[in-house]
Length: 270
Image (cartoon, rainbow, N blue to C red):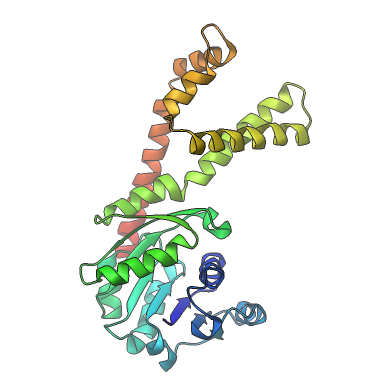
């Protein structure tokens, strides 16, 4: 299997490294197209595959083409790619907001997979939601899912609109977690801990909570109940959280992320 990654930025490089590390593909079967001359030279030094600076006939050699570029670059990119695209090739897009139909129309092909990975994919613990056009075969889907799973875990959904939902949940999700962690760090500092102590308290607490959640078969509600005791400190905190309707406000915030993802999809289509 020969793979062409278009875009040598963070996510394109993440995919290349993950595929090679998982021995899914060799450097001889990895192609990278990067328009930035400086970035292309940097990629060549990494020995992760053959790096090109311009589109060409080599594109037809790829079984899978991965679009890992910014959505605003699509119009100019599709125009130069189209002459080299074969309808038997599978195109995997991780471009936010660009619909399957838009890609199919502008590239003149119909085997399209659209995916939304997130930042932790860079260290192999990412979460990706993906969908596809009807012409993508089951074998092709399984092959792509194996590739995506080399960066963490993945979920397939038949509904393309769930990509926008994934953007709001797992795509933006790491920032929500960092936001809450920062709040704990700041609270710890206000209580008298140093910056380093506050960061350690927060980091180890988050890590411990996630490890507990993964090790035992309890829901989040059940874990909250286990930590809380009648008249205790945790209950006091949750009384204040409930008074401020924090859960509802957080859901509203995430819904706003979804709305923005849907707006960006419309803008990318137009």
